[in-house]
Image 1 (cartoon, one colour):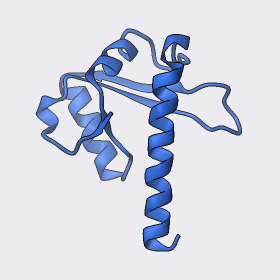
Image 2 (image 1 turned 90 degrees about the vertical axis):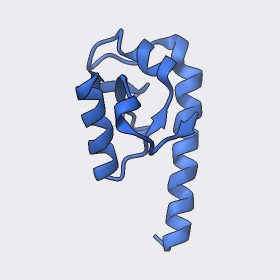
Image 3 (image 1 turned 120 degrees about the horizontal axis):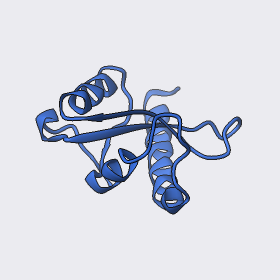
Image 4 (image 1 turned 60 degrees about the vertical axis):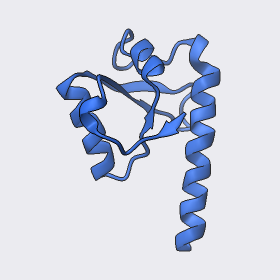
Length: 99
């Protein structure tokens, strides 16, 4: 997992996930895109300070699913690792800015 603010034109597929530990049993897919759509998804994420992680294999697997689908059980571990990573970034941000 690598946080990437690199060139958006290098992105070929993108997936957006949502997970609320209090409401959801597992993360689910809220957006999928390829090519220009994927590029725009990444741009929009940066514009709204949403964490972006580059993982082309994971994006490819998720793009074989549909919007609204829960993530496949085979991805639970990798997505859990991503959620922990993002949570730690959020905690660091809160501590840094006193939020």
